[in-house]
Length: 74
Image (tube, rainbow, N blue to C red):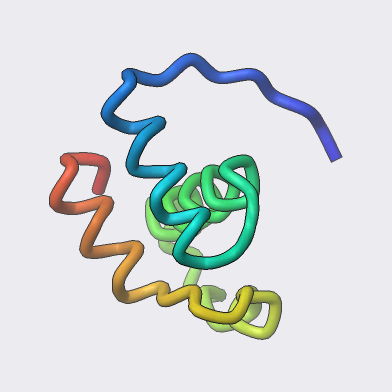
């Protein structure tokens, strides 16, 4: 696994923190999930179902996708 440091606007950091609290996980895990979902969606490889088994409790790919679209990332 590679560690990656990313600088994001305060608003994004706050949203990530809020989601992390809601899911009972870390901000880093939420950010990684968002990036993973975005990459898989962008690649369109048709294998989206593979990562479903690794989802954390409370994680909704549909909700994450809607949030990405609302924020202009997808």
